[in-house]
Structure formats: structure tokens, C-alpha cells
Length: 206
Length: 206
Picture 1 (tube, one colour):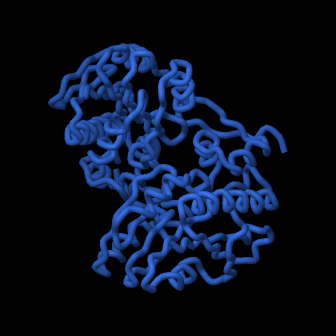
Picture 2 (tube, chains in turn brown, red):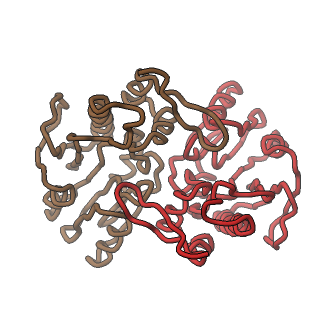
Picture 3 (cartoon, rainbow over the protein chains, first blue to last red):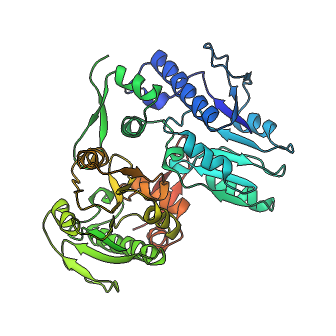
């Protein structure tokens, strides 16, 4: 299955500014992209990157550069007869097993919700569905599928629900991932900080 | 399977103080408990509540009152020959399907990680495993199982990963739950607030 991976490379991961500077955040976004592409490949998908700017490292998969808004770029991927998947580039916890479950779940539209209302991954098997990534997109996508008479099935996965946007998301990478992203975070001095309630992170050095 | 549900009823959900007063938070915790007990029942489990104080509403299941620390109380449930599950009382997104997946996953110890390092649900099929709920308990539980020579299998579920502790967790209830908890939140004026990034919540009235 063709798996489109939208990648925002211009000023990525701005909410991680308390921990990493702009160059580090760009590098970090690319490290996550590589992990996601690997997991897609190992799950049997054929990834293609939809980047909003040139990607200046070799990722071994086709890269389409298109600087229009995300929703427009993704909608150009949809509407054909073949199933297409859309998987966000910052799902650092994604495993081949979680993606296989996504790809193999039956439904006209199969979605993995993200924390905070996002739609972190989709499989679209009907030409009548379109995306709209503004706001609480998971609710919008349910409504769009219903209006189109398409079935909408949600995959219950923590690994696909966590997109890495904020410092607390790094806790999940440190606790649940084994990939390059985890290594990169550790090499940049980020450590778990155990207190009361949920675990947080701290950066030891710059 | 016996399913123990630890319930802290003394001053529950203190991190929701920005939205609800102490009486409301007590009521809210009980509403979530009822939803969780229902989901366990519908998944074929036999729930028993382990409460740290008397529960002053009728929950239709046995309630054991024990004010010792959580870890001690739960460890008293373990060590026998029969499998036991431990499911936290604030998993407002838990569905019968998610709990069935937990109960039916093979392994000496089966765990559903919570966001921020918690262990939101467990199935224990070996007398050699004990719990320790302090700090990043999912990492501790992996280590305890390894030391005991027990297999440790994790269930990848967003519905079991979200325990409702903080205002942002209410976003997930509003977007993904259909139970009493969602009704209660809506009746208390909490609404989704869409902005940039993740969706948040606001309370319209008190």
C-alpha cells in the first residue's frame, strides 16, 4: 500500500523550544521521520514523503516537495481507486506491529486518533473521503466519512496516538521506544525526571 | 477473572482543581468508577473495588476498604494461583473491547501502560510478580517481571493509556467516550476549545 508521510521541515517542532534550539529541532524531526519510514517499510508499506520543503538528507524513499497547506497536499493523494495510507512523520513510538494493525483493519476509512484531537494515521479505501486537518480533526474526519456514507473504524493504539510535539511526549519515547529517536534524545541529555504524578523530562546539558 | 479496581476516594483528582471544586471532584471520581465497572462487567470480568475510604454510593459490586498504600493493597491481591487483573478506576475511555483485549492477551504479566509512565491495567498470571506503583511504574514492572523470570507483554491501547488526571485528559473523554463520565463533564459546562496545536478544554459556567 502507498503510505504518504507528510513532513513539515521548515520550522518543525517549535513546542520543543524549551529543550532544543532550531537546528536541533530540525535534526530531531528528521530522526523521527527516519524511524517512521523504517517502521512503515517493515510493516510492508511503500512510503513516500510529502515535504513542505526540500529534505536535505537521503531518506531512501521518494520525496515530493509541495509547500501548499497539509490538507490540500493530502487530498491530492486521495480520490483514486487504490487504498492509500497517511501516517504522520512524528509518530516516534510507531512499531511495525502497530502499523500492520492499522493497515490490516477493515473499513472504508480507518483512523488512529492522536492525543488532543488529531488524526495521526489513516487508511482510505474510498474515493469519496477527504481530509481536513484543522482543529479536532478526528471529529471532523468522523463527520466527513458519515456524510460520504463511508464506514469509519478507529484503531485503538497508544503507539499511534502519541505524536511527539511537546516535552512531555519525550517521556513516552524514553519509556516505550528503542529507535534512533530515543538514542538522539538521550545523546542530547534528556532524562526522565520522577516526581509526583506523571513523569516529566529534564535536559542535563546543552 | 477477578478484576481489582483500586479507588482513591479521599481527595481524588486534585489536579482537576482548576475546573472542579472538591465535592465535584469526588462526584466525578465516582462517575468514572461506575463507567469502568460497567466496562469490566461487559468484558466478562468480576470486579471488586479496593477503596481507601468508604464508598458512599451503591456500586453493585463488592467494596473492600483498606487505607494502606496502593502498592501494599494490590500486592495482597497477588500471589495466588488464579489470574488477577488490576484496572485503575479513572480509565474513562476504557471500552469492553479494550478490556477484552487486555484480558485475552497471553503472558505471565500483561500490562497496559499509561501516559507518563504509569501502569493503568495489569493481568497477573504468576504468583512471582509483585507491583510497585511509585514513579515510572511501567519501567519498574518490566524489571520486576524480568527478575522473576516472568514474561511481560504490553497491550498497545490508547483507551487504556489515558487515565483522567489533568484538564487536558478531559479532551480525550469529550472526543472518544460515550459514557456517564462524558455526560457529567458536559453537564458541568466543560467544552472543547479549538486553537493551534492540541485541543484544550474550558469551563463555561460554575
